[in-house]
Image (tube, rainbow, N blue to C red; front, side):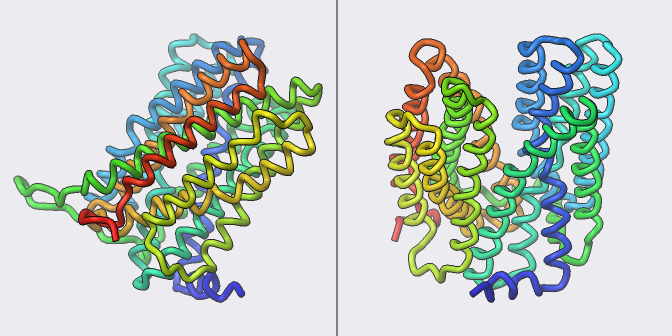
Length: 394
């Protein structure tokens, strides 16, 4: 049943680079929570903690694409090595400054450095799969595998950082993120045999263009889905609080991620006979449909069961979007193309969460799920403009 995964992981070096990329991506789900736990654990306000987390995310979003562009031009090893060093150093300084009660401006500066330097391993590992594999079906399976890995990260990262920061020491959560991010990235970067070659070009030569007509709908879908995720996460925490069990929020979100994890694995087992653009439409519509009942559910158990079902639409949609990018973007700019889509998703998180927060304050948690529904509808509409390549959709 899992022969497809066995075949791609049997490629020399594949299991090693995919495994190290998993470790390197753990900070994706650890740092923002770790910042909040550390800052509030030293007696400072949630408002300050939230501002520092937002600055980290903003810096990461702004510099992700330039870093990916450098990776394509100079190679994965040199760029990721420097990025890992900057990330680790910036976050380490942030931890020391906050823990010692240092000035806020130093904390903001260091966390900005950490976010801006965060290694774009997620984009790089998908580019690496496209380099070591030749067959379209195998690349789709590899992307499904990495989508499942992302869900493992987002299921385990928050639990790990929370246990370390609350059960051991407020510093421990971010310390683990530093070790995972720097160590995992360096291990990934030093695997030269599977790394795609750099595509440095002669001075004055223009790079191959990225097909805007293909990328724009995928990016709109990504931003809308980011808003959907951000709103649903905040609404779920508030929903659990309204039912006097705030701790249940983590389980609800884990069930959502578990559904996506299973769907991601299944996606990699399917021999697709339709293009990724059509799959993106199906997935985006599915995401919107699964948001419909959330605003009327009034039971923690029912909410957990439905979120698990709703999670099945996530991974196939994301895999389809990245497959469109992999087919359409020139090899010399593939890492950059991947980073553009991933950044689009991140860009949607903050406004989605902020809008849901305002709805919660005025109308309660259940109504806040309507923000996710609207975002899902926007993603579904945008998905119908998606195409597999720069020409007309098949």
